[in-house]
Length: 134
Image (tube, rainbow, N blue to C red; front, side, top):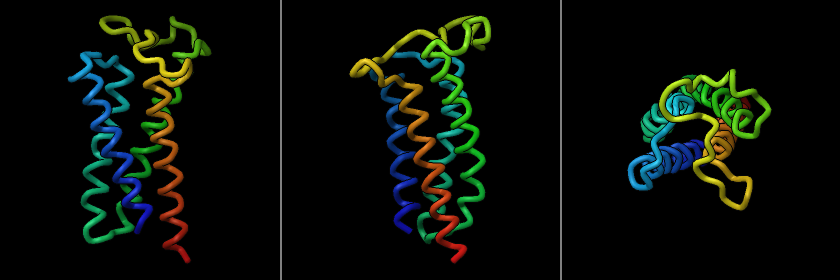
C-alpha cells in the first residue's frame, strides 16, 4: 500500500510542479511538455481513486500512462541534450522544445525531472504488481 501512496505523492508533486513552472514562473510549456502533462495529470486522479480504499487494479490503468509519459520525457530529454537533431523536433511553431528554460546545477532540466518522475512511477508500479502476485 505504501508504494501506491508514493506514486500518488510523485504524481501530485509533478502536477503541482508543472503548474508552478507555467503559472507562477511564467514559463509556457512546449508541445512535448504538454504531452507529458497529458500523461501525468490523469495519474494523480487514478492514484487518488486507487488509494482510498487501496485498489491494486489501478496499476493496470496507470502503467500505460506512465510508460507513454516516460517515452515522451525520454525523447524530450534526448532533444535537450542534443542527441536528436532539431529538424526532428515537433515544435515548429511557438515555444521551442529545445530551448533550455531551467538548468539547475548544470544538468537538471524540466524534461529530466519528468523522466525521473515517470521512471520512479514505473518502478513503483512494477513493485506493486509483483507484491500482489505473491
